[in-house]
Amino acid sequence: MPPLGFTLQAFTNLGFWSGVLVVAGIYAVVALGLQLNVGYTGILNFGQAAFMAVGGYSMAILVLEGGLSFWLALPAAVLITMAFGVLVGLPSLRLRADYFAIVTLAMAEVVRLAAQNARDLTGGTKGLYCEFEGVNQTCFDDSWKSVSGWILDRFESFWSDPEPLLPLLIVIWATVALGLVVLRRLQGTPWGRVLRAIREDEDAARALGKNTVLHKLQSLAISAVLGAFAGFFLALFLATIHPDDYQPIVTFFAFGVLVLGGLASYSGVVVGAILLWTLLEGTRFVELPISEEKTAALRFAIVGAVLIGLMAFRPQGLFGKREEMVLGRGGPR
Amino acid sequence: MSAGGGTLLEVDGVVKRFGGVRAVDGAGFALSPGTVTALIGPNGAGKTTLFDTLTGFQRADRGSARLAGEEVLHLPAYAIARRGMVRTFQITRALAAMPVIDNMMLAAADQPGERLHDLLLRPGTVRRREREVRERAGELLDTFDLARLADDYAGTLSGGQRKLLELARALMARPRLLLLDEPMAGINPTLGRRLLEHMQRLRRGEGMTFLFVEHDMEVVMNHSDRVIVMAEGRVIADGEPALVREEPAVIDAYLGSTA
Image 1 (cartoon, rainbow over the protein chains, first blue to last red):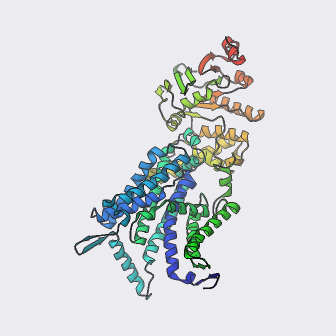
Image 2 (tube, chains in turn purple, cyan; image 1 turned 60 degrees about the vertical axis):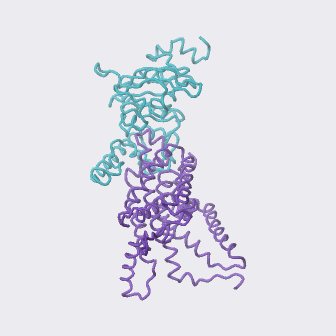
Image 3 (tube, rainbow over the protein chains, first blue to last red; image 1 turned 60 degrees about the horizontal axis):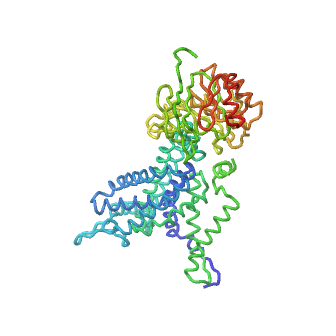
């Protein structure tokens, strides 16, 4: 091994990129919801990982335990996650922004630890994947696998060995595109204007006759739905649902995406997600004369340094508006 | 005031405690439609707390406030504003990172586009209403000499311009009764005079009712029909400016001597 090597081979590898783009796409979906909450409504939602968990677990439990078809379980799980978001928001959205952040962070840990311990329902630390009845095996992603296989078959007519992640990649990025279009359009409506007013000064919005609690609940519910979708995609990508995949770090990575892309910019979030995951995965290939674990830790240090550099030289992120950041909350009044 | 006008706002026995302090201690008064009333009193008299309880920003411990006959004291702030009692704040609350025009358009009442289902089901109505709202916002900005700043971020406005914006924005909500907390504080005399002219014009032209907190006695005496004096959470005098000025209790309260 050379003392300091860096192989570019990986960057021409389709498998590398599809892996990066699947994860980046999942994080883009998560961070779109966060952008709606944090960037446009001013509510600090630190519980996005819980919405992913509730979405993923409800879907899998409905399929495996409830015997529901995968295609019915998806919308049902979306509704469950949305209701969960409203339930969390109802008491806590009356709190000040920083207290709300603490409540959502705690809520995410409650969900994860509950999933870890409710073994009968969630499989505990073994996670959820398949159920066995004699020789019959039912997995939550059976229906998806047949669709995915069907798509890959279409590709095979002109591509001898299609990338197996391609169908998931297509579905994820179609969701990102749809989410991006819908959210951007919503932002330009009178509804979006009320959200921005809440971000700027909730009391002023209330004084002008705006039901701010209702609008914050709606913002949180939409974000929860996006979280549920990200939860589905993560479950299909990993082919399992495990409590460890919903650690608070998931939410923090999504916040990293937000900071990188810039507050109050939906397209920034998408670019930020691709950049962050290229950086995180790409640095895997830096070869240093140190142990594997140290290299792994160094990757995060590099990402950290990039974020700090960004804060210092471009605090509004890549696509954020500097004026809104300087004038808005936290800036001088 | 017309004979059938009656009372627009009737406040009775409002109490608001903070711990052991009775910030508002049984305040009561009535406002007739189309009048301009000044609310004065020494610092700590409970004027702002009274505003806060009347507009739903603080829960009153006791008392009642009827707006055009309807009890509003228990309602949330947004619901009170929608019923036509709109307030401004002592420290201006411009939505800094939003353009001036968006500050104005936000305040419009009856925009169905603020409801998600109406955005989907009645997009035409939303667009039509949005055009009306933009037009009305433009007119008001013209009146208040803010039109050329329409596309600037509200955070870039001067203190005086923010005061004007806040009044113009409150008018977008089509209030029947405006509660202004120190509208003249921190702005230059020219702008202050303009603000007073706007107030008189709105009262005459549209029959709007005003209750405003003010410390400048010259303004209070010359620009209000009635003066309400508060001290230690109670109303100690209520009447025409000239009469209130002679009231011994008022003089005591202001000079701080014990009667």
